[in-house]
Amino acid sequence: MISVAIEKELKVYRGRHILKVNYQFAPGSVTKIYGPSGAGKTTLLKIIAGLIHPEQGKIIAGKETWLDTTAGINLTPQKRMPGFVFQDYALFPNMTVAEHLAYASTDRAWIERLLQLGKLDSLADHKPIYLSGGQQQRLAVLRALAIRPKLLLMDEPFSALDPETKSELINGLKILFKEIVPTVLIVSHNPQELDGWADDELYIA
Image (cartoon, rainbow, N blue to C red; front, side, top):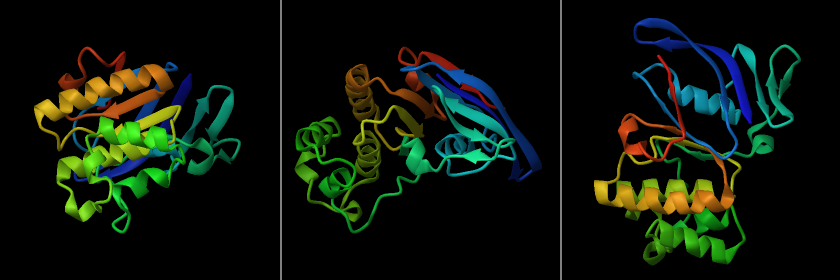
């Protein structure tokens, strides 16, 4: 169980907005997170990952406290160890596809399996500049999975994919998730794409 109770002030085009979330994510569940632009969906993922600090709140993962602003506890992202798919991909320009995955895992069989899942096995020696937007996005997903994360945070992970590629990737992820059983939070501007897959949903206004 990951328990999140946080407040964070956001600066938005209409002034200021307070992101308030009090939610419990069940172990091994897939939760879709949606809401209007500027509501704080991406900020929430970054707070959970430890990349952004809220003004106040607690985050407890299992029996471990990741964040407690009152007690002065704030574990680093390296200690929280989530898999994170960034909206802008955040790929390393000088690394090939295979090197991105090898940076996160030394398990060659696992890396090959991920490459096949993302249909990037024939592009393993290519750098991001030579990949299409959809291929870069799939690489970002594969890199996040390379560490076999127990918590996977995905920010618009399918936005650059055509319907057929998206469907194939989601079906592959469903199989993979049954094996590694991560708790998955997916921010999506199109929550309908997760119908029939997500176990729960969180609307952020």
